[in-house]
Image (cartoon, rainbow, N blue to C red; front, side, top):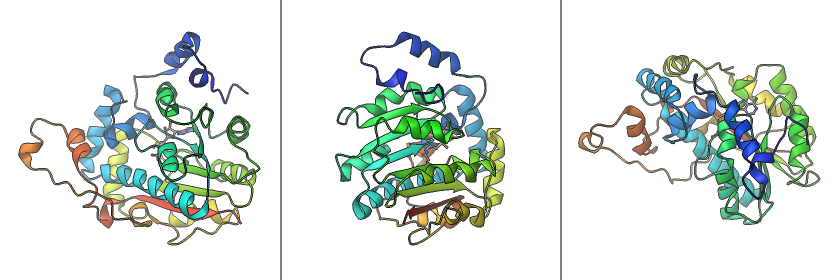
Amino acid sequence: MTDAARTDATTGDGPDTDAAARIRDRIDTSRPHPSRVYDALLGGRNHYPVDRAVTLKSLERNPRGYLDVRHNRDFIRRAVLHLTREHGLRQFLDIGTGLPTPPNVHEIARSAAPASRVVYVDHDPVVLAHARALLHGGPEGSTAYLDADLRDPHAILYGARATLDLERPVALGLAAILHFVEAPAAYDIVATLLDALPSGSAVFLTHLTADLNPERLLPGLKATGLNFTLRSREEFLRFFTDNGLEPVEPGVVPVHRWHPDGTWDATVLEPEDVAGQDALEVAARRGIGDVRDEDINIYGAVALKP
Ligand SMILES: C[S@@+](CC[C@H](N)C(=O)[O-])C[C@H]1O[C@@H](n2cnc3c(N)ncnc32)[C@H](O)[C@@H]1O
């Protein structure tokens, strides 16, 4: 195990106070972080005041921006179910996991195939601190968390081998993470990861784009102060075609258009229901069933490795 891919704080039997202290030392609450801003926008509780402040500003500029992230999560649910049910995938390598948000990938996969094995990867210490919660609820050794950086794909593959059999098909998940990596590194990383996986493996990707509704998206993103590399449809498609993969039907589409399964709730809130709540609390209580094309700025696609 290299320094770049540690599981130490999450897989030990008893409390590891040194590891916990090391995690705490890495947490920076003075500026917003992607995982925490995303958590705030999803209606989670694992972020800090600095994250909440910029996310509220972002929602002021793009009031329906929460639909991007909620539909991104729902794409993950449908993609994992599709791969589990239709293509028999039983191993998942989910890189850029984010803070726990039910249903998490291991919960989704196990709802269809209880023996599924999942490795989560993230480089954010707050995600790591919450990883213990993610690891509960499955057969021992079937879920692991790697404290690793996408920019070191070899360390990820090395660490994943402790839980996954890389001689057998693996579904690689890179949801809403590649827009934090510039080219050419992003393409090289995906190629390295896919090259290590056998035939029958799969990949599910999502990615922010300025192709769709930039007049809504860009002011909201700017308010977060985070840096994003937005990609066009062609640039997104290259993650597949450069590696000899063809996305399954319906191809590259805005995430809400990928095999919708009619499960979205369309909760409507009356003013009296939300009195005294801030925009993030209100967004968290809304359904996602009223989505329109002009709300969504994230492409999603799924492919199988021949
Ligand atoms: C927007 S969240 C997406 C979470 C989840 N994949 C989803 O789509 O719901 C992006 C996550 O990627 C992680 N991340 C960003 N850059 C990373 C890197 N270079 N290595 C590992 N994780 C990274 C962040 O810490 C964050 O948790």
